[in-house]
Length: 262
Ligand code: NAI
Image 1 (cartoon, rainbow, N blue to C red):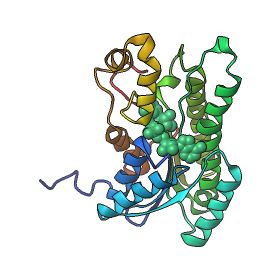
Image 2 (image 1 turned 180 degrees about the vertical axis):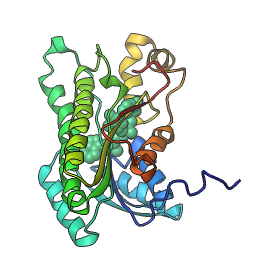
Image 3 (image 1 turned 30 degrees about the vertical axis):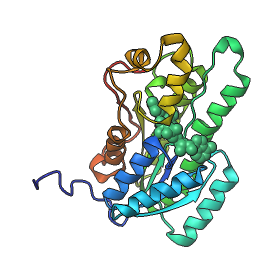
């Protein structure tokens, strides 16, 4: 059936970067952006996984390249920026999906887990935004989508650092959106808050909660509406926010969830 939906989102000619693109939500987002016509640079410290995503995209007839990137390495971000300046000299879309879960409690002190969660989930996204804005600012346009989490919305007795890191990136998103708006042009910055989603990270949560809650079924009963989201269901929102169809959406923190949250 052809109609309104066909060609509704057209990213032809756009350059899109996706961190955490080797797996889960990042991979699904990379594939969705490419299916809409973008040329996608898949970034991950899992080099083989990133290459596999790029292969999948090319297999679907899309355009993609893969590059190794550890998002906590600020120098590597600078080098990536230099490479992009040589290659395309533009970034239209950045999706910050690289992330790690850490299981901890405030009473345990958290000195290690806190730093690990914040290094990837916060620093990694901030370095990415700064690098993308190096190109978006002079161009006066662009879209950044940070993957936060519904875990940012309330306290979490088992993933304190994780929830705090996701709340932090949601707040940085709001501030970055305002900075961009005040600077003029048309750069939008938004955050997606996925509910519990069926990825490698979800498996880690199942494993962690096995003892306490009695496995996958009971975990799901706590986390979501009887089933986890599929990564593609999160990618649909990422795609929308990356597109001109979301032209009046910036500084927004948008849940993709079925009511309960994490
Ligand atoms: P995933 O584990 O399938 O994918 C995460 C990706 O990030 C992996 O490919 C991993 O190699 C990459 N990564 C981790 N550290 C990195 C680093 N230092 N540098 C470069 N890449 C790195 O997990 P998923 O679920 O796809 O997670 C994607 C994002 O969604 C994360 O930010 C996560 O916190 C968030 N999220 C996930 C939810 C879930 O239930 N799965 C719920 C809410 C948010």
